[in-house]
Image 1 (tube, rainbow, N blue to C red):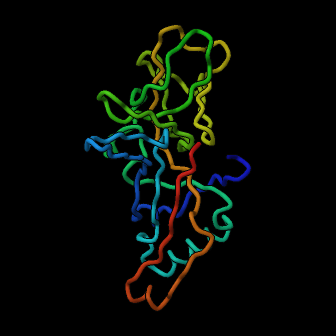
Image 2 (image 1 turned 45 degrees about the horizontal axis):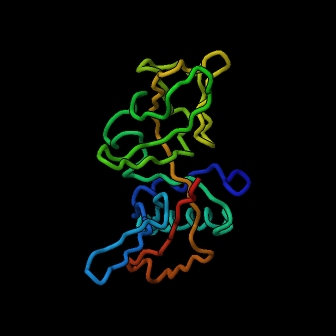
Image 3 (image 1 turned 45 degrees about the vertical axis):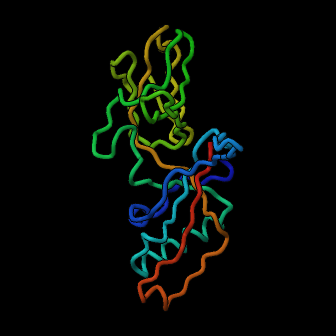
Length: 213
């Protein structure tokens, strides 16, 4: 991802008015008995967005156009803020270092990947978080917050690394709280803009698709 990804965020004022969410790919076969056989073709969900709904002014349209040109259309990925899902907990709550469990210590391992788990029923979904917001990550070991001098998180990868000699002890729960962006790219190489339609209230379509880490 690094060589074809720009660590910049899509215009925030536009993103916060956009639409979209997770997409799954499920195959359903209906048998002669009427029963169904369902199979998921994707191991992970993939988010799709339309940022066009967030473009309300000509200045915003110009900013998106400039951003599109700099990304060369679909060529380079970038960060996108999902208004509904951008924290380790609900959007209305503050980040705490015990929001999400990201691993269990063994006394040796020093690197852990940020993740967010959805649901607490029979089949929770664990999502890898590869683009945390710099400075937002808080880490705890056995519910005790760790100073960032002893553990650092790379905002470009989402990997938490404990310094040598500070590996969490065996059996210790490693948890984290964070804000994050979604790695996406434009899902088109063409932006079609009808200025007459725009001034009449019609918004252009700006499709984005998540880049699976």
